Every structure is written in structure tokens, then in C-alpha cells.
Image (cartoon, rainbow, N blue to C red; front, side, top):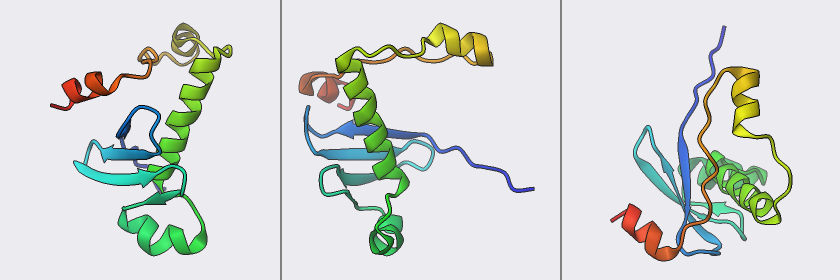
Length: 110
């Protein structure tokens, strides 16, 4: 039986509201540049496979997911609460983190 590997990705906008993102693979320590508007990534998977198939790589998918979460957060749409997830699954979740300013991002990654 095949097992799925879970990779931890962290998508960070290079500027608040920017189309340019840096996506870090936390486990591997690799970083890739993503253009959210053009739908392009600097990773080898996108460069050699996904681009030709007009598909998104995992880094583009992560950026799109983060952008969509931010959109929902700003619109204050009802979402499932962390408590509901914990009660249903037994898994503790992290709270939603609001958008950070450029200065806050610099402080985190300094």
C-alpha cells in the first residue's frame, strides 16, 4: 500500500498585497519564487512538467490557498472554528493569523 507524504509549505508574500511570493518547503529547506498573477513558479516541477501541462505545482497551489483564506478572512465569511475541528477530529489547530505588515514580516525573517 502506498503512503502519502505530507510536506509543510509556508507561503510568504514578498510585499503586502504583492503578486510575488516566496514558498518555503519547511522540511527540505528549499525556497521557490511564485508569481500568483502569471501562475508561474521557479521550482523544477513547474519548470519541466507542470508548465507544459498547464497545471499548478504544489507551491502555486499553496499560494492560491493562502490568498483564498485571506480573502475569506477579510470578507469575514463564517468559517469552521478551531474548536469545531478539534471536537470533530481530536486534532488541535492553530488560530488564523491575520496579514502581517512588511515591517512585521521583516522582523520575523531577520
